[in-house]
Length: 438
Image (tube, rainbow, N blue to C red; front, side):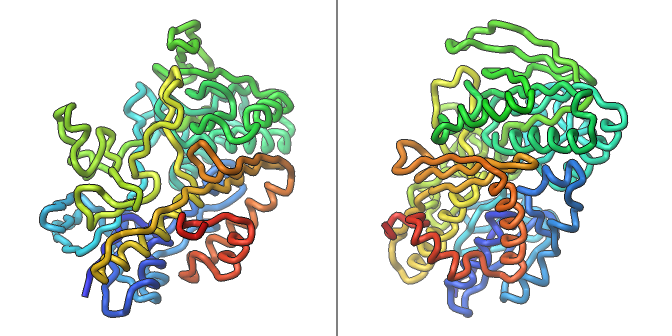
């Protein structure tokens, strides 16, 4: 009988745990290792940061829900991995053997790559919506800010790959300021490494450029693109603006009273420790130089074929290599769900003595909230060239995002990541998780 260990239990790892348990016979063991003992619905963090949600609205304890499904839960941090011995080390010193390892660790936040960057709890001068505790801290400062408003800077620094939440938080803050009737006291500037508004690290999705520029003009939000944030002091952000050839054309000193910038990501600490210091090794057999796990078309490491990985922690080359300022590639919800499904089928095949054969489609459906409106993006697949690209905005997207929050959290509590009706609706729309389903 096989032991499958899943490291990480967020929006990728938790459905992964449920689905692999469902796919395998009861004689096999599924273990989940997670650094915190609760699930947080990360997409709702921007709402927490302005007080539209409380942490308990988007969180629940993991152990009772996993245990009910026959999954062993370990509230531990993975601090080491020995792929030759098929073993991980936990922070209490104990080791855990595996037959198959699934890495869904999410990212480490590289605030240290910009001087003065990060929330106050990290010694920085900005706020963050990357984790729910960060968002709680951001809300505390938001309340203070609204009593004494001033300039806002929001966006994403160089090397960032997750741009959507920056746009969402900009629009959510703008909406909340209007509700408080203090919007006229708050100049807003969007600072981003993207070469243009709506690039999203993907070279755009449909007319995302026109859609997002129009929305920001309507909301009186200025922007600076091709921006490299060089230093952040208390109340001042230093930004170099580049031309398309990568030359600095203007240096900005931007005052602010409140700022949220998304950081670049890297792999978890135990994965970073596995990076080979030899530049010619390209990180090593398991990870790239940023600590992201190398995977093949089956979501499996090419060297250690019993190690699979999904989500933000996998290595994907930049989609647009012409960006003057580095922009990473985002890993979005449905894209990650397709990895989950492929990994389940491939481990099931491996246990039967068969080769991995299922490939995820990396299709994407994204709902971006704008406070009182929203934008929906469909990219099939996410990485261009695409078979279908579509982008629309309207109040219905805001309502759909609220509904999806409730729907996803309910499914995670129930231990059912893809109800049968969802599967058939997506199939009718031609949005499949596996390439073999085409």
